[in-house]
Each structure stands twice: as C-alpha cells, then as structure tokens.
Image (cartoon, rainbow, N blue to C red; front, side, top):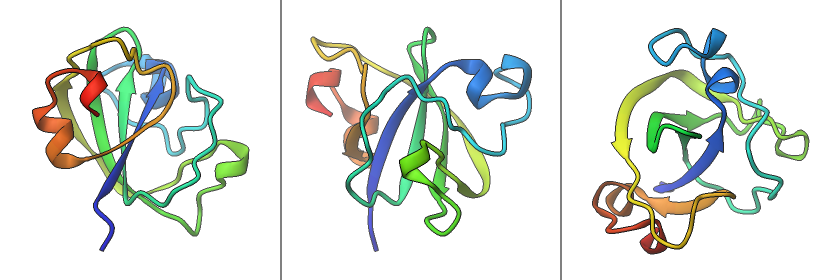
Length: 113
C-alpha cells in the first residue's frame, strides 16, 4: 500500500464551491497553483489553501479518473476536512510536495517536508 501524500496548493475557489472554506468541495480540483507534473504515485492528496497557511482537506486519489496531464486530480469519496497548520521555512510551497502523513503532521518547517 502506498502511503505517500502529495501537497497541492490551490486557491479556495478552486477547492471549495464559491470559495467557502466550510462549504462543499468541488468535484474535481484542476487549477492548482503550480505547473509541476505529478511524476510519482501518491495515494493521497492534501490541499493546501493558498493564503490560509493551512491544509484544509485530504482525500484518496482515484487514478482511473484522474488526468494528471490535464491537471485534474480525481478523488475517491468525499475529502476529509482538516486544519493542519503549515510551518513555513525557506520553502513557500509554490509547487507540489511529496511527503508522508507523519512528516505532514510533525514537520518543523516546510523545508522538512
């Protein structure tokens, strides 16, 4: 079983309907704040909402429906709402980041992810 998590930065209106952090999730998140290709096979995606300093949702990736070349990450079931503070270092999460759940929860700074 894969345990890798990919952190994807995105604007609130591209992750949540009408940009409401407490509202419904968009069915597909396809406008990420990055232009880096996904070249590994993480099991989960963590959505970092730009401007909030937090990761607001985690979901399992559906590889059959995802179209990474077109920038579409499809997920299995509904995302899990979380609020995980991101402790920034020199790395400002401008691109995607591969990590594990343990590092995501215990990181000292983004440089550790």
